[in-house]
Length: 181
Image 1: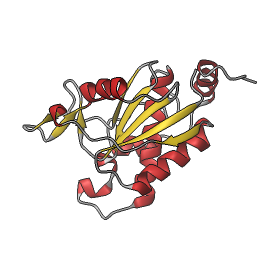
Image 2: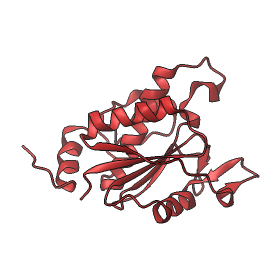
Image 3: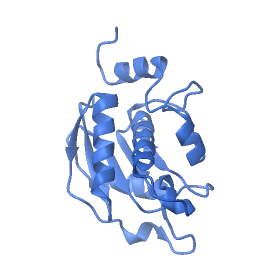
Image 4: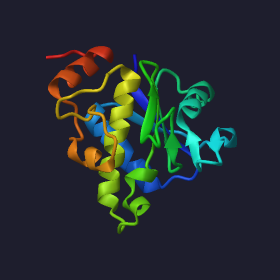
């Protein structure tokens, strides 16, 4: 069972984004957050034709390379990610294995040539971190207004709440071995 989260910056990452994610995890998952040393982004997972990193291969590598002593692992990167036949992904996880990875590249307004908005970037990054950690713990996508609702665009990220619905919260606590009222 997981009692904490190890937060690992991958490549060059903004510290303010890492801090916002850590606060959101602590507030919403009620888990302690440990800051790990930054790790490099291995170039073998970079697709030069797409200008993106292969998220599915990177998260598997991340799971194997980063030891976190029974903690959930969350890698955070600014690099653009894709997986399978998708143009991009905000994040990816290994279901029920405690490992997740998010990118805030497409969560940042500047990606879309809009004015910077740090508050919005932090909110989006927290939502996607909670979403991917939810998968890493064992939750599936949810149709309710819930952070576990699938998002295919930043508009959909903005529309969902930064919290788990009552059903997902109950299941999450059961999966974490915590008492459920």
